[in-house]
Length: 141
Ligand SMILES: Nc1ncnc2c1ncn2[C@@H]1O[C@H](COP(=O)(O)OP(=O)(O)OP(=O)(O)O)[C@@H](O)[C@H]1O
Ligand SMILES: [Mg+2]
Image 1 (cartoon, protein in one colour):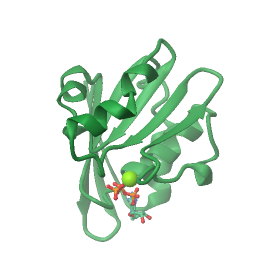
Image 2: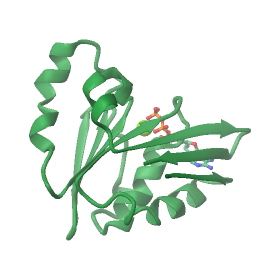
Image 3: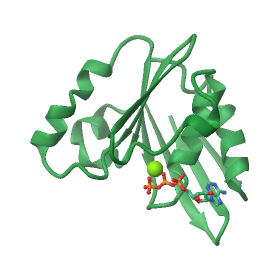
């Protein structure tokens, strides 16, 4: 299954994220692909809001904390950013395996750094810049 959309503002990307609850029903491992500033975190704002797990403005980048958790009535979302991870040992220290459960959704930015997640992912979402505010979003599930 693939879905594709082009958004023209951050608000539109958030609104699109809100529509993904059915597709992302737990358990899921979701890889978010795209360059710096592509809109991965922005999309997660909409996804977390759609699941009733967080207000969109409360979803911020886990760049330094590496993992943010948002608990909703139907799913626990874990927003993970591996940008600052450099070694397999650092990755292991994060203990991401412990986050996997029947009602968890792992939303992973820069997940390419973890070959296991690339192999075991259920859904891949790619975001590509098109000009200043355009973003092409492609979902493969
Ligand atoms: N159509 C759009 N969709 C999403 N974000 C947009 C769009 N147009 C402009 N933006 C802006 O682009 C930026 C996207 O930043 P965001 O933190 O979501 O990117 P990211 O992919 O998570 O980057 P990083 O890899 O650094 O974490 C925001 O400043 C947002 O306002
Ligand atoms: Mg981000």
